[in-house]
Length: 280
Image (cartoon, rainbow, N blue to C red; front, side, top):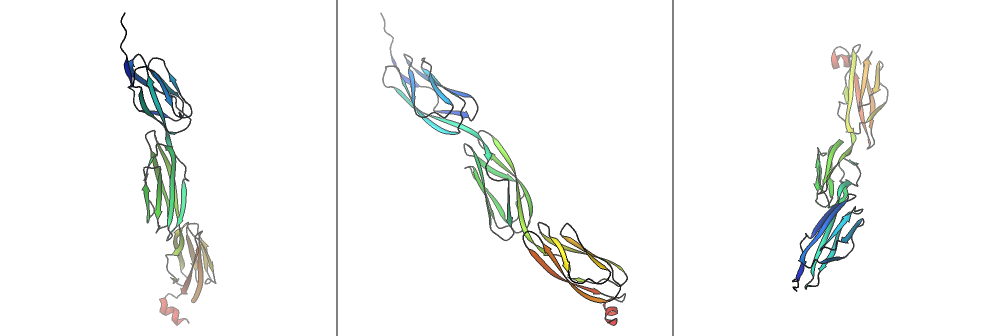
């Protein structure tokens, strides 16, 4: 009668297993050795997974994981022949990235600005951006699932960026809107010179973000009117009927602040400034 030789077991499957959150999967633990080994494990399996020895020198890790992250198990294969085989099995449950920070932010020109972009997912994502940042700001991405937008903006306006978070499980994008406020400033002349009995139009213009609302106080020369527009401008128009010097105040206001400008209106005759002076 012959007796089969015994060979100590060895674990022949890999030391890493990969699953995806909320997706069914499996990983087979395999061994060599005679007789077939019994495989056992010590450690906390990821939620949703189970470890089942198959009685034929192997085991199956399977299920639908419900929590992302990394777990380690201590595997032992024993068949009576020493030494037993051991292995540390690392189980990675991956999760596609998702943005957890807001999709918009606001700042003000001339003031230091910082915004943190954050994501969830496993492994941690690499973050990048495309689009034109406001002048004075920079985007610093990392491989740890976060990024920062920092700096001191110098120009007001609205910028739209595309943020991308990528890991080994997938890629996610977010449309990010960055609004930089800027106090109003006048860009048009402070001196108006309408000619008597001739139709006159002048546009008051401003910069700033959001666009300013314009108003005026003071007495306009007879025949002229002030019309505030909805785009950060106003129109002074009409026909003056006599020589005069008038002074009015124009106010430009937005959510960042209010700026005033003194506007001088010099109504002159057809002979220009000399005609005006001769009429005094």
